[in-house]
Length: 300
Image (cartoon, rainbow, N blue to C red; front, top):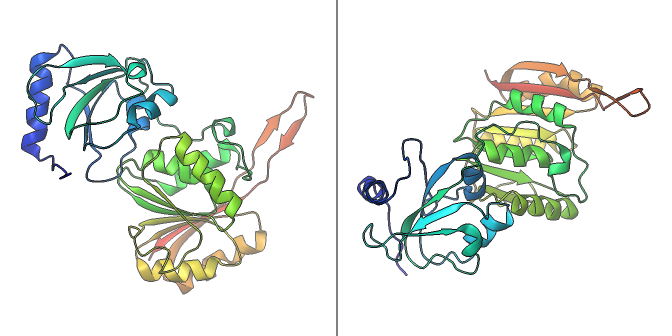
């Protein structure tokens, strides 16, 4: 089946079609075309009251996945053809879970309960349980602040599972390459990707030319310091000499020597901070979380 290309003219024609045949306010509609690039449909619908989705035929589980994510009460406006003409139908997502997309077209999804708030430093209970020990949400929030992820960034995350998930939510128009050396951690990562409905995450088991040959060149890397850190930096800085680097470590010696290591790869303007977080427990005593160092740098 030939895939349709949704040009500006076609997108405008679908907007006019829905504007002329529904009472939906399209002033703040979010438009995503999932035929050109993997886009995160579920997070987009969760955070926007009105989403216009362009999709090709053959996606059989899109409504089931929306329903499974708790979006069953959202309204879907659609027609039965590939052209913006003819009768418009309106159903709840929960009433469409047994059907897929049978034509390349644009459909409107209305979520009256949408909350367009940034998810920074999500609670660990929001992630799938598995082999991974997640960093505290407060520390993760600081890490994401230091990463300064943009909507269209292509990011490599090495050993930072919850960081990869939150980065993928922020970089909705970009991509995340999540590197997990441990097989059990890769399985947990896949569970999280499915749980959050993410389409812009690629999971690989190492950093080298073969593993990353089909991945976008990252503009930013977050890595948990390890014995392979210098090897990873050597490859990534060769791939993109302008790459920005954020390193997490609990080892003081690594933190103290990070500037010298980064300098070898042309990374300067190094900044190092330490984060200390304590939480008051039920016994009225403060329990301190591990206090990591966060090192940032970029091409000087």
